[in-house]
Length: 199
Image (cartoon, rainbow, N blue to C red):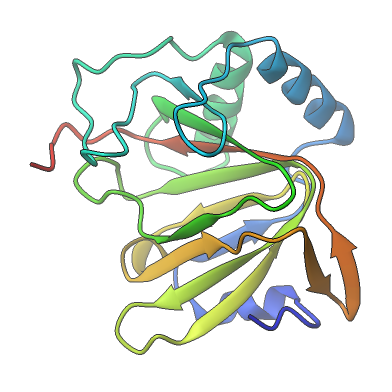
């Protein structure tokens, strides 16, 4: 993927894709990372994760009301209330997946489980920035997007249901003509759970 000269003008190519820079402050970012690192991490995947509200089964691609995880702690509840109050989601997110990516790690192109989650997927980036790749399912057209630290990514409509998104597994990205080394990146994915199951 060519990530040379990434800018927000790429957002217009995908309906329903919104990126909000500096959604939180640097101090908020530091506090969130510290809070997350005080919680237990799961190493069931190649990357470390935390689940709040409900636990998502990656192998079965399913989630049910019975698959409860730790409740959202107050500092995540505050973030969930804010994204709803700011109008980024019509309902209060009740499920959060926290992913940790170290340099060289990524995630395959995918669409978040349609029967499992609601119409809005929100992702807050903490720590290092990185390049994300969006791929349209039918045409295979690709659109790159730089995920800056503290930015909030919102997927709705076509961006949620018609475009795959993924992060190439590498240790650096080309951004604005410069080679940018990746550091540790943590992202909080917030969703409203849908009470349906994939079999």
